[in-house]
Each structure stands twice: as C-alpha cells, then as structure tokens.
Amino acid sequence: EVQLVESGGGLVQPGESLRLSCVASGFTLSSYTMTWVRQAPGKGLEWISFISRSGGTINFADSVRGRFAISRNNAKNSLYLQMNSLRADDTAVYYCVRGIEAADYYFDYWGRGALVTVSS
Amino acid sequence: SYELTQPPSVSVSPGQAARITCSGDALSEKYVYWYQQKSGQAPVLLIYEDDKRPSGIPERFSGSNSGTMAALTISGAQVEDEADYYCYSTDSNTNKVFGGGTKLTVL
Image 1 (cartoon, chains in turn purple, red):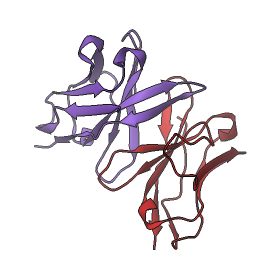
Image 2 (cartoon, chains in turn red, brown):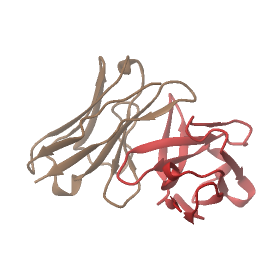
Image 3 (cartoon, chains in turn orange, green):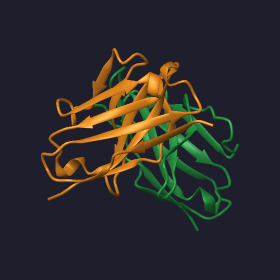
Image 4 (cartoon, chains in turn green, yellow):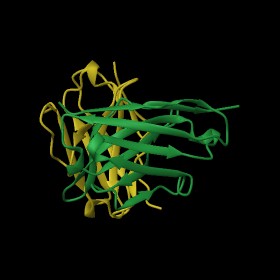
C-alpha cells in the first residue's frame, strides 16, 4: 500500500523557517517524481514545487520561488520542503504528493498533510 | 498564467446526475484530471487523462473533455459523494494548475 506521511508542521512567526519531511512507503521512491501541493484554510489546491527522480530538476510556483527549497533522499525514502522567510499567506496544509509522468503530468497518491501556521 | 474555472457549488438530490464543469482556454487540447476531497481528508484521484478511472473508483464517476470545457459527471449521486471536486491540467511542463474547486451537495 502506498503511503506518504508528512511531518514538521507547526506554528511559526513571520520571517522564520520550517522544514517539512515526507516519508514514503509501499513503493520505490527513486522511481517517481514528487511534488508538494498546499491548501490554505478554506481555499483550493495550489501546486508549489516539483522534484525529478534524481533531484536534478526542480521547479517552483512563483508564490514560493526564492524562499522554498525542495530536496529528496531516495535512500531514506524521504522528501523535504525547506521553507524560509515565511509569511502569513503561507499558512496552509502542505501535502506530499506522488507524481506520474505519462501522456501528461499528474498526481496520484497524496499524504494526509502537515499544517503550517504563520502568525505572530 | 493559465486558469481553470469551476462553478463554486453544485447541488443535486440523491440519485440524480451531478455535472461539474471545468473551463479553460484550449482545454480540449490538454488532458484534464479530477480529484475528490472529502471534508478533512486528502484529495483522491478520480479521473485521469480526461475519462479514465483508476482502479477502485466507482463506475458512476465519468469524465469528458471537448471544446473549452471538461466535465465530471456522477450518475446517480450518493450522499457519500458530498465533497469538493477539483479539476487539474498542465499549461506546460512546469505550470501545473488546479481549478478553484466545486462543492457538491447531495441532499
């Protein structure tokens, strides 16, 4: 069974940093691209970052580019999201999501999410 | 930037068909995907590549995509289908876009 379990969420003040982790099980992490998708309270889904199988290709949504970093450790079955210079509008549930590269690029399995709250 | 537009809400009675639309420029030239998100839960993939169902998704869920509009149809909606539904597509290899979501009420 595919499982993605996020951790590291919490309450931080504006300008601070936080690192999310995601542990994958039930599949070989190195065979899949991975992404982070977030959802602000009461709002819709927003894709924020992508990382290729080897980690050699990454990209970000404009809303987080330059502040967030994505990385992975396939040997540890883990994905990470380093979030710096956090702002109130970064408050959201952050989902670790497995990507599928087929005729197009889409997401199949999602973790349960980690809540990040940015508030003074 | 590319945008996908969905109606904020759709309401049907149990057993009726529910149709949720998703519109965007030249959408028929792209693949559309649909996700279901029940309250407090993570999204689940319902439809991929316009009209394909992953294993385990009931047959009452179907998808279509033509012109500038894609649609998710639930034939015979059930109370347990109450959820938020999101369409998704890609504008380019790097631009991954969700629609704003549609809240389906079945009562």
